[in-house]
Length: 329
Image 1 (tube, rainbow, N blue to C red):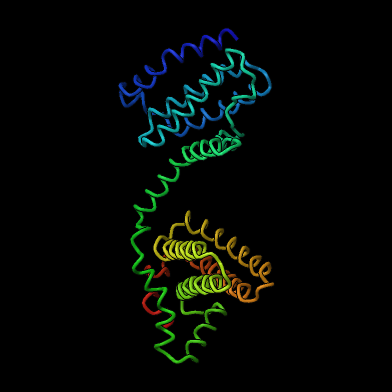
Image 2 (spheres, rainbow, N blue to C red):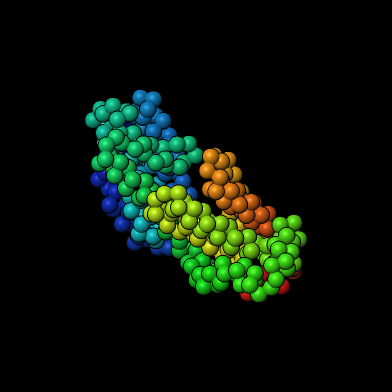
């Protein structure tokens, strides 16, 4: 216990020099794996929390100190200011808990919330408005670096630069219906329902657009039945964002990491719409529209799966957006 206490005191006195000193050494001494340091710090934090809750204060202090040391290494290798702030916050949390244990604070009163596998868990939401605000701030601080990295990756891949093309695909079913006879349009629609279009992208674009228009119709019905206008606008906005990102992922991105997750999301959305349709049978119009959205999303899921499968056959992948100007020529 005395040895752990000495190590903790030494880190408190030299934390600044440890972080600053690592910045001044040569590149070879800084060539450790940042992610490994972060993971090791969290693993030690898990072990410290377990020892803390078990009442083994000496072991907990030593491991909190070691966890803080590893996180300081990760801070030194991190370039993102937001990520640095989060890492420093966790380091401070571990050191504060070690200091509290040194002064005999009960083990469960301030123990950091951690889970197995070296992943920091979100703290439980405190009671009261002020506590809820503090919990939200802490939770946002924990996930902010991941959100920032994801947004930067999406921006670098052009995820936010295809709105005009996407808006054109939303109008294509209407323009197509006006350009040909109703009978021909119904025949083309039936072709996509039976999963036999000229190309999976054609079916995907058509039903992705129809799903959005079903959402518009559902919002209109919602307002006619006395629904809240703000909720209606929010629903349309969410539907537009979902349709846009599905369009970007399967037509422009063609990245497996995104397509696989989008497939899982689309399947989950289909199940949600099915249950919404069943639960809304007391009001027939919303139930029918939810059923239409469920069917459209299910068809989208099938075509998304087909497009995802085509990524493994680059010789037959079409140019992105090839079927966007005219869906079913």
